[in-house]
Image (cartoon, rainbow, N blue to C red; front, side):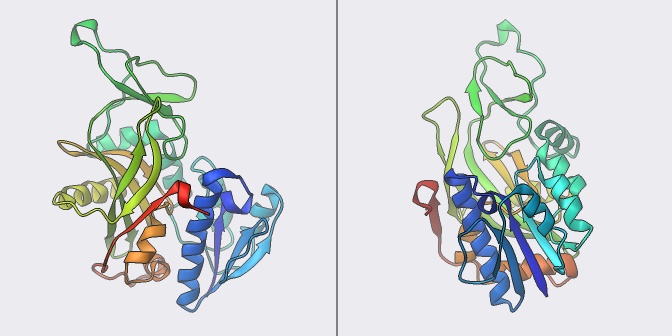
Length: 303
C-alpha cells in the first residue's frame, strides 16, 4: 500500500520546537509504516529521513497539492484549526487514516468540544461565562485560545476575562497527563497514559515533554473517560486527550490526530503503530498492546 504521511510543521519549516516535534512525529510514523512493508511518501522542505520517499515542497499550495496525489491512504498532522480543510482535500483523493473533518473541527474548537464532552458526561474544566460573585472569594481561572495547539497562549489568572478568540475555564489542581489511544472498527484500543512535563514558572503552564508511559493505579478511571470522550466526538484512528487528574480525571484538550507522545510510544510498544493505525481503518485491531520500559523526552533535547 502507498501511504502519504503529511506533517505540516516540518514540511513548511515553521521553525522552533514545533518543527522539531513535527519532524520527530513524522519520522516515527514513516519508519513504522516502512517497517511494515508499505511504500511511504512525505512532504519536506529539505531534510530527508532514512526511510520513505521525500517530496520536496516550498509553499502551502505545494503541501495541499500533495494531498491530491495518488496514494492509497493518507495520515495528516497539521495545526488543529487547519485540519478540517486539509482533511477534506485528503478524503477526496485517498482513504483518510485519521478522524473525519467534522470530528477534527469539533475537537479543535475548545468551547464546542468542552460543551460536547460535558453533555456526554465526561468531567471537564468547566466553562466560566462570567466572574464569580465576590462572596466566593478569590478564584483561579484558565484563559486560553478557543483554537490552538498545546499550552500556547494559556495563562492562569484570578480574572475571568477572555479576549477575542479566547475562552475561560475553571482552574483545577492535579497531575497533568495525556491518554493516547486508537479508535477503529473493533472499538477503543488504549495505548499509553503519559505524564506531561510542565513548566509553571510563567503566567501559564508550558508543555516541556512527556514520560511514556506513566503507570498509575487510576488508569481504569482515565481510560473510561477517554473512551467516553472519543465516542462522543466520533474520533477515529490515533488520537490523544489531555487530562488533569485530581479528584477525578478532567478532560482539558482533545487532539484528533497523532500527538508528540507517539515519539515515546514507538520506543516502548512492541506493536507497530503504523499497522495499528491501518487496522483501525481497515479492520484487525488487537485487544491490547504490549508496553515495556519507559521513555522520557523533553522539547529542549529535540534536534
